[in-house]
Image (cartoon, rainbow, N blue to C red; front, side):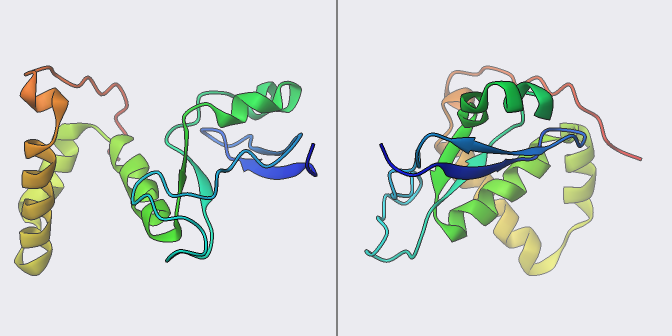
Length: 137
């Protein structure tokens, strides 16, 4: 068994913690681009796509910290952070903001949206997403 692996768990709405897993759970390969450490990337990090548990719950059972977690390189971690923030909002509020963006940013967003639409099982199956959070002030 390897040495204990220190991991931060932010938890939603505060109450995060630091936990220790028995060993490093990473495979040192980005799940998004498939590059391995030493082959185009320096390191990988575990990214929580969502925080399902409260910090106290994770302290009692540290392996829960791996739920809703992906392993990604630095570039894809930044993107995953942005996507997690984006999915915290009501889609109608995202649309309101999108409508007032212009120029190069709008063009890039349009490209991303088209790529997502063309590669989404959700759109291909005509299913709907349900967002329950609404953080518009």
